[in-house]
Image (cartoon, rainbow, N blue to C red; front, side, top):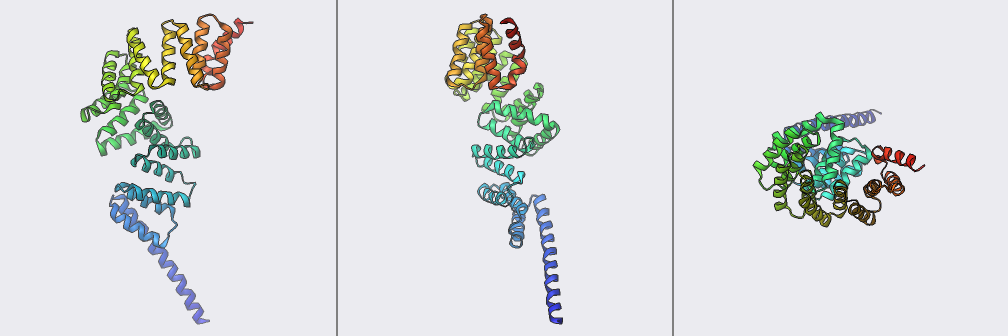
Length: 355
């Protein structure tokens, strides 16, 4: 009996000491990580995993150490392992998305951020990272939409992250990111200031000229906007947003020939956006038949595009073809209920008119 008690006591003591050693090791790892001693932290976390091989939190931290040392392949492997152990931890999926960003695998990054937002539609970090990723790959309207949502959720936190990035990196990308969010926040003066810094650092930074051009447009400084779009065209002549932006600037300057020329180019490069923009421009200059032709092209190529029906409906209404106008407005709202606020009054007015 005595020997059994001794063995039992030994096992308990050994287990307790093992737990204490593990806790101390974990604290040492955290100290190394927080002090950015990533090589030391890597060794420490690896030792920890010898005792606790399925600790997903430690595996995630180890992945971040590799990420911070630029070993993104190893980081990816550990992040996938952490996710396999704990699929419900949203932060791991967000970290994997960031890691794919570093690997320039932007499609996979977007997939990861989408999964995070499926779990929590207001998960700020994933929304913020997706906004910046969309901008990198040239999906500017989605990037802008995500940026606005971020600001609605927690504007203070977003600018805290951006300011920290500027202080730590002080490079063209960090200034461009904060400028873009100032643009989304409609603080156009600060947006211009930061786009200027981007261009001072890197005079060939395409997106800074493009975004500054749009910012000048919102400030009604159309000549400066056109100058930036001209520079952007030199840097990336196949980007449709250059011609959409410059076409709009020429429109406000009432330079019809130049506006049409740019919208024509946008149609070639991005038919959906180009036909819609040119169609609405034709509405403004009262070329209703041409507007209908453009919106019918939208409907033919993209039958689920609500703006095709909304634009054609407006043209029909202006031509006093009220029955077709009403049908198009109703179709637009059916495809995109968000248009009800804008088209609701038109629909009710036409219903009364046709009684």
